[in-house]
Amino acid sequence: MAYADASMPQRRFGETARPDAWWIQPVAVFIGLSIFVVYSTWAAFQGSHYWFGGQGANYISPFYSPEIFGDSPHSWFGPKPGWWPAWLLFSPALLVLWAPAGFRLTCYYYRGAYYKAFWADPPNCAVGEPRQVYLGERSFPLIMQNIHRYFMYLAVVFILILARDAWDAMWFKDLTGVEHFGIGVGTLVLVVNVVLLAGYTFGCHSLRHLIGGFLDAPSRAPVCAKGYSCVSCLNRRHMLWAWMSLFWVGFADVYVRLCAMGIWHDFRIW
Amino acid sequence: MSKQVTFRIWRTDANGGGKFVDYPTEVSEGMVVLDVVHKIQAEQANDLACRWNCKAGKCGSCSAEINGMPKLMCMTRLDQIPLDKPVTIEPMRSFPRLRDLATDVSWNFRVKTKIKKFNPRKPDASDGSWRMAQADVDRVQEFRKCIECFLCQDVCHVLRDHHKHDEFIGPRFLVYTAALEMHPLDTEDRLPELKQACGVGFCNITKCCTKVCPESISITDNAIIPLKERVVDDFFDPLGWLWKKLRPKT
Image 1 (spheres, rainbow over the protein chains, first blue to last red):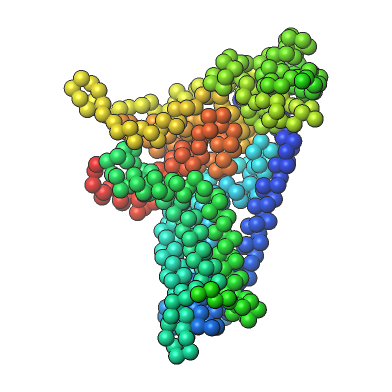
Image 2: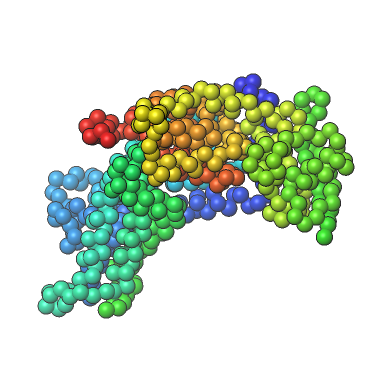
């Protein structure tokens, strides 16, 4: 194109005049997301040690909630159904994990982050790219990112379910089977988990738009205006919420798993 | 206290090409990069071309790339950049070079003419005036801070590396469109153009435009993503489309 021909020479992949360590951010994102994807995939396929009921506790891993079919007391419809094909691997996590995974995959923050870290498009601001061809989010497959709001609807439902799980984690059975209010370290882990996930979900760009951003005159809809203001407040730190909640949801699974395996001891605080 | 620093500045040649030339220069406390360029013009390279006007970060004329990042020369203090190695100063890469640090940014003005203009509703009062709530105009006020320095256009990889000037209007004009589209008085519908001719789908949310904006406009979060969401409302969300048809008109 004639317009571009007169510009400065095209930079090669990774070429830049930036003297700072611009590669640290994409490398850190690459490592962080890779660790999470590998661990969560492994954990989802285990199908065991996702519930801890020792010492009267009632902790379920957030990777396995809601448990539609399964063996723990949290299961909605009982154990694995008889009609489940024998050749098809079963794990309660595989039935539900696609929803939060889709929410994060299509999230506006993560999109920008993984386009840089995994696809080098661009590797970082003002750094040369490896490819000439660029289609953006206008054609398949990336045009599918536009379904983000549908994953957001599901994510909001998941927050309610995880909040219920955190509530359940506050009730401990004694030897007679009677439930008493209590707090263990696992309770705190699950409460922090739902708080961080809520901070991330309720700061979503799509929610911000749907709750009031779509209006040109929000003063005519005060409830929408208030909602927009609240979501905007969380949205300003969306990246921080995204990373904190990602780390903590993984840690919550690790905590429940290691308690269930008898490796960690759940300390009762109250 | 002054010290000598080397500035590596892009100089064009008579054939339309160019190369970096080193200018060792005495610098002192409080100087900005534009001061240095003026000093080099005065003492070493009288023919060095650069644009500048206000020297206060408000005219948007002295845009350039300093150590590889798009910045205003007048707002980049020397104590913000490492001086132990040569400091590179080069013209913006998204636009054709004219000479040395000056580029031809006229494409931006042509793009602007293609965006549907402000089209207010009928006046609210008989004297031809309108009534608006302050809260309703607060959101678009942020976009009006833009000084049209075009640093966001320069850093955007869709223009810079992929040269989609014919298909994508760039962050600056998405901000401009957002200011019109979200205005409480405006009645125009720019969403079909945003999707097609303006190419909002080309933006892949790297947030580089937000990072370089000297006016700290949240370009991506407050302008581009809300526009993308409005495009989703109209073209990619059947439930949203239905809701728009059914919801009571305000």
